[in-house]
Image (cartoon, rainbow, N blue to C red):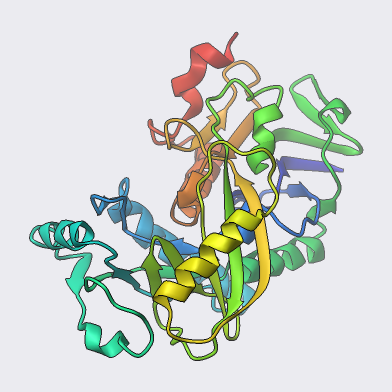
Length: 350
């Protein structure tokens, strides 16, 4: 079979890249194995315009967020499912310092921050030092996206459920050969597997581990995301996603009793409502030292590309850079200089 682009991985990056290329009339084949837990499946699906203890705007959020919102809405129309809804964050201040920091930022950041009348939440939470609101925030139904788009790919004969083995891939006469597939190019959207990719393993990957608890909290309103060191994010039905950690040093990628104990301790001291834990999951994220994506083609192997390294901001970054990469392939449009792997040309040329 002859295709234009062979895509390895059907996470958020692989899904949006294949969606963009197919909509441009490209012949695409996606290679992916069905896994219970991946970085995308374990992620909360939240787009938050501010970050960190200093509550500063995330990188170019004024560009990335509206683009992402539109992309999720458009893909949702194609899949006949609502993939995105506004779901603002209520930031519960746990110390006087947290409250002061929020109040100071509120003086200059009125677009994304506001105060909240805590009386409305006194019956749900043990309140300490007030609540601030972050808006607009968006909640993505990631599992619906992945499952819905996978069905579309299968119906279009554009997905092979198989583990990709580098030894089966050959580059000959500027054509990529993998099993019975011939492609003009191959693009790796394979998350943490990028750390062992023979063409891109020299990139400064810095994987981290995230854990999350799924808990049933039937009486908690589902129109907000609640944050106090941990986040409570509406999941499915009466379930909430609770997490997540960012562990840079870990012995294994599996769930740990320590995280579950931390969540139960936090809920006991914060939540006034009854709850029941129903699942505990963990995965590794393909983050990197620079906290900027890896987008583009190898400096020597010009038809071998990568779309990876989105880290914890994948929900806001993946739609934008998948579209940009697709336009680079089709119309030779430039890739954002801080995301292009041209910045690692010397390293990758070794």
